[in-house]
Image 1 (tube, helix red, strand yellow):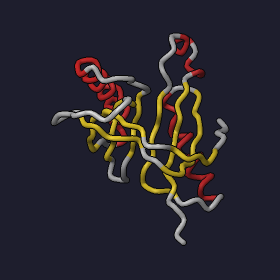
Image 2 (cartoon, one colour):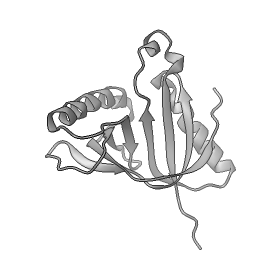
Image 3 (cartoon, one colour):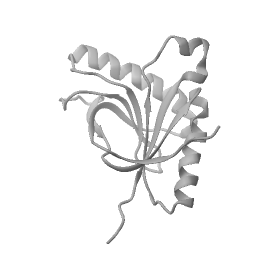
Image 4 (cartoon, one colour):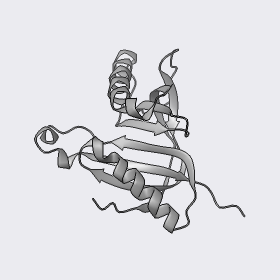
Length: 155
């Protein structure tokens, strides 16, 4: 699958997340479980303007924050915390299709950045589209944004 890559600027967006260190082979179980737990917290706490689900990969050691966008910062607890999506220059693509193909989108961004001499930071994230029932019968329509924070140029 061909992924169109573009450079955009993002703003910080508050999130409600569960942070953990997760081996890559366990992400397919951890992400949906954490999203469900976070969504239960959002409902119980009455947080305003809940948005799309997110997974933020913070380093190369497997530290990940999984949850959802929210409208404003809030007080968390020992398990669920307030965080935010990164702000800055990013390389971004949109992946259409099952989540099992997200690795291709990540690889496309890394390869494109290498050829364009764009330096990646260690931070990347996925923003999952709001689920649509039609995706159950046609998973090729599933829409996920994949973003990589770029290192700012040194002057």
